[in-house]
Amino acid sequence: MCLLDEVIDWDAHSITCLARNHMSLAHPLRWRDRLPVTAGIEYAAQGMAVHGALLGGARGQTGYLASVRNVRFHVERLDDAGAELEIRCQRLHGEASSVLYAFTLRAGEIALLEGRAAVVLDASAFANRLS
Image 1: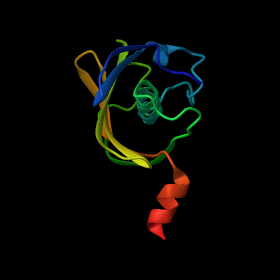
Image 2: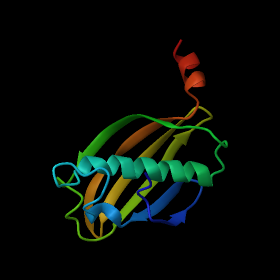
Image 3: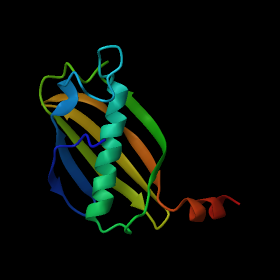
Image 4: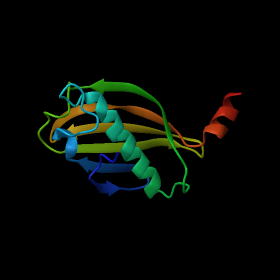
């Protein structure tokens, strides 16, 4: 499932993507005829994944969304936002086994949600650090 339509800007520290499918009645994350704002976390996760790929992440490397924190929802749903979604992910810290991002979703001038996410890139290295 690919939710992003295009990357409009990126550099070593951030990426900005656009999505236009949030109003589709066939959206795969719709629930009870709505697209809840919580689906925005998946949009952000896909932005982080694209950013990692553009930075030259290891081929075939799988990332796992380990946690989201400080998530603030400013609306209840995404499908009535009207404007296209702007997904911005900023890399705050990264190493070989994990990355920390801040993310925001907006529709025009309206803030939809924001938060931080930890992505584990090498689960075995991460597990070794914990033991």
